[in-house]
Length: 268
Image (cartoon, rainbow, N blue to C red; front, side):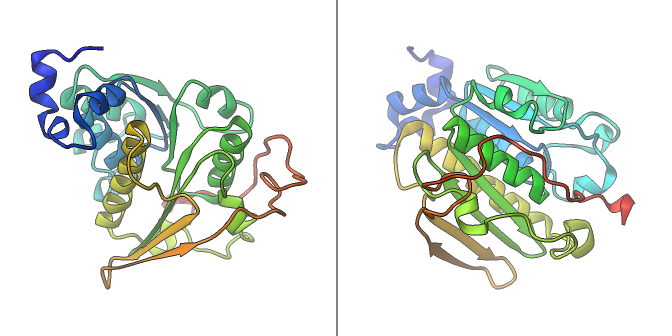
């Protein structure tokens, strides 16, 4: 791949970085990133990945844009209310960077389709808002040997980690979904909109650094931040030999759908 003059101009601030350069930008341009969830986390992640020039961005979401989404899901605008989120996001990506290919999946990711959806992508971003989806994404990526970025937000807090094959996974830390109603949803507890932006951009940065193979990803590390105090801390952990999906004797050998209500204000 050789960059055109227009691409050199568009990505010049990347290219002048010694750790990116022309070679790194070419890797970004040929990269394929899948974002599951075009909401609070997926929205900023998609915007920055598109601006960076990721060659193919996949978007998975079966939802429609709602007025309450606009407080944090910055890829959607007021006229988009009622429109499928994946289509709304695709339109904005095209305006930011028309050379990015966008593949949309206007469907819910579940055990019967997720393995097929993720198979053609280099890196997966978990932008979902419920525990069943997060554990499903983890399990699909472990079984499919796909790297992914986990992100979670609530109130003023966020957390992120990155999984690489043969390293510690999400279940190594959390094991299984919490009991029903043990943890409030964002509709019950609320979320500061900017927190979603902070974490979504962290996930985008993880995807970009993976594509250019530079820096230290959040592997075997859980980054936790509190925006109310603007404090950040890290918790290191190791692969759990007793993990039910990636341990020495895994009990999970096929994908299942956990049952737990997602964040939905109208149902509360």
